[in-house]
Length: 128
Image 1: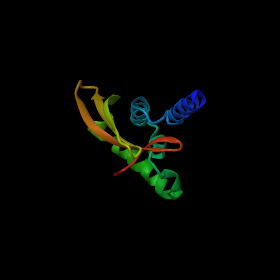
Image 2 (image 1 turned 90 degrees about the vertical axis):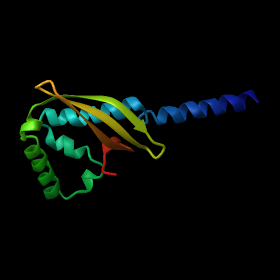
Image 3 (image 1 turned 180 degrees about the horizontal axis):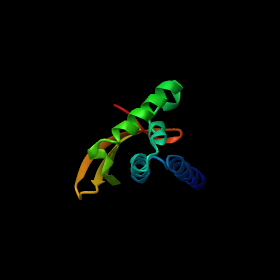
Image 4 (image 1 turned 120 degrees about the horizontal axis):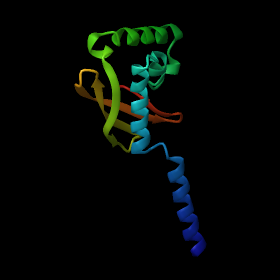
């Protein structure tokens, strides 16, 4: 009986470790990393952060990178200086919604919600 209980507990621990990416901390960190890429001008990395982006034709992916770069030249986005995850919701279907606070150089901020999906390679942005 003791062996059965120990095996059961060990199975639960192993399962929990294998799902380590399915955590509030991991989802928030991924969301912050994607927007930090934007701030740092890593538009290719940002686009690659979308689920299934690796399935897109290279020319279309390149257009998305260019469009992201163009978007970041707008006056309101050019002044983006930092990002902070302030809350999140993890759902049973391996999706998350992370609330981000975008901070601008004029001391203003804006809150946005970023949907994420957990794939084998980690949390990726997606459009629900």
